[in-house]
Image 1: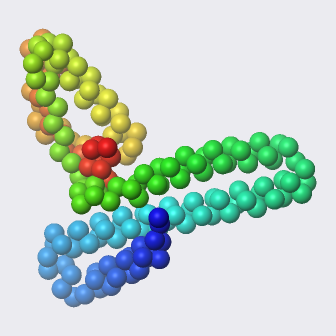
Image 2 (image 1 turned 45 degrees about the vertical axis):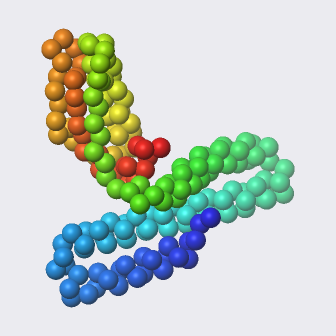
Image 3 (image 1 turned 90 degrees about the horizontal axis):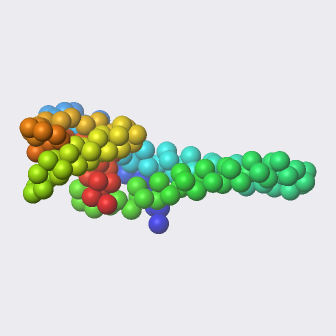
Length: 171
């Protein structure tokens, strides 16, 4: 499932591209390569961190069994729970392999028919998305907003930036 050697090799190949004297001649292509290096490096570092975590848990478990330490086993259970959460997040990220999943996204919210209540709901939905973006360290910018006369919004457009913004929002 995780071809970590291929990811590491990809980092090396892309890093060598940055050393070329012609690399910065095409600024857009250079930014794309740098973003891909950052994405692959992030995956690689997360994998190494998870590998270290599971090895530490395993070692701690063996020591706790030898010492017959029940308090350590409780701590190990907490560590396993944390590891599982981190692993699921990592696994989901690696499953986002669609062509556009790693890209930024333009998000439009428009309530359609339904009058003031639907416009108010669109405003609540905007707030929910904003909290989600803040919690998950996405940058967002409201580029267009049309408020409703009574309450809520008739239309709002956001640009959302961050790792896998499109992939997470489409799923």
